[in-house]
Image 1 (cartoon, rainbow, N blue to C red):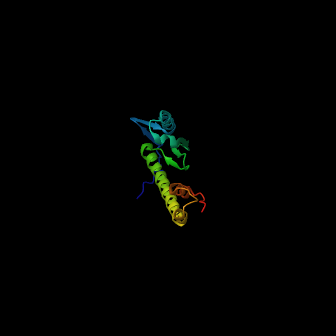
Image 2 (image 1 turned 90 degrees about the horizontal axis):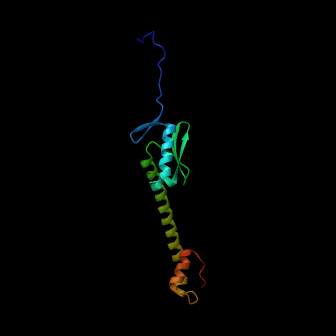
Image 3 (image 1 turned 180 degrees about the vertical axis):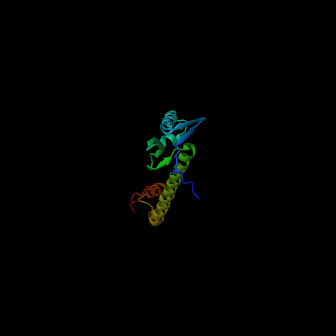
Length: 135
């Protein structure tokens, strides 16, 4: 049976604190500490992120895609996020290379006939660049 004299239970919410080195900081102080770390720019990934304090929460904003990420552990979060961009760029590069190969195969007649005296290497470079080849 519940204690009739007990009032409503209070749920306390702990204000977010952030660990920065050996110190525990509130959101505003942590945001400033990260901005200072970014200004020192000791790691490459800082150039791809900005630090923001939004509604009492520190966020990293990717300058490539605009995603807002948690800043609780930026040395893990930021490089992991950038790897996604790297994978997407590699995939796009692969697709472009495949499209160039398809284009070359479709236009291989120009290589076989020659191009009005042009060397095969020149014709190949024109095909790779997507330029028209004179037959």
